[in-house]
Image (cartoon, rainbow, N blue to C red; front, side):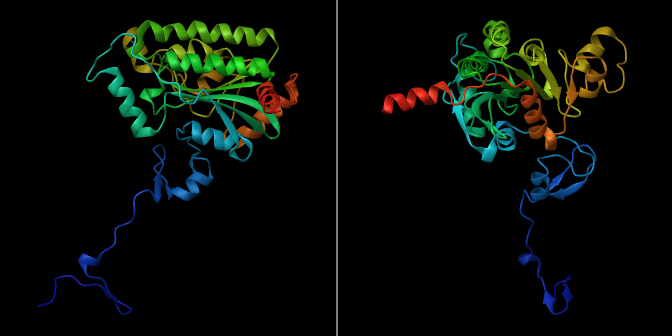
Length: 299
């Protein structure tokens, strides 16, 4: 008895039980224009849609690979993790949520900081990761940013902050809000020493992050289409009871209203930053002080 369906073409017979499924992760579908392309091509295009130029969210690992020469860098304060100062419990205790998130995505907290070279020029980068509890700003985030700024000051290296956050971390309440003052004060010291600070706002940059370090750059720049604001558009609309302008809180809208210096495509980001740093020309140490101290200790 023959099966009800049999494909016979050029001598090929494919029974249903031998059908091969397409492996997951081979294709990427743009969430904006729905264009389908291979994942390999999408990654070669730096996770930007090849048709509509939609910038997909990426994390610190991808940004470091894009910006640092040959993806070579030294991470700062890599093992710093949050405590539980308020004994906070929602659907689960805060320490359990922290451990589960760390295990799931392989990150210690919502920001990573590192120093390396960008087209041969020294640079310190602190980059937020939205995958870690929505990129929320907790005490570890503020402390790591503060320490990265101190490292930039000590070694007279420019500082780049890449923001991507839903705002303050509710599990740390007031401790989270304190980070706004801490990071702003550290940036004031950086400014006094005339060391450049560039703030890159990516999708989304909201809440206390926008209200503090994200908008304090010597240059505030953004990726195309990034959501930038304090409260979200839905909250604002419900509060004022009016419809909002088209593309409200998009990077383009914020640029038109004078809160950004320019918008830069991710594929051009490294060269744009390199050109900007070349023009600013800070007094950069030939060799980071930390490396000199290590060499002296070994000697």
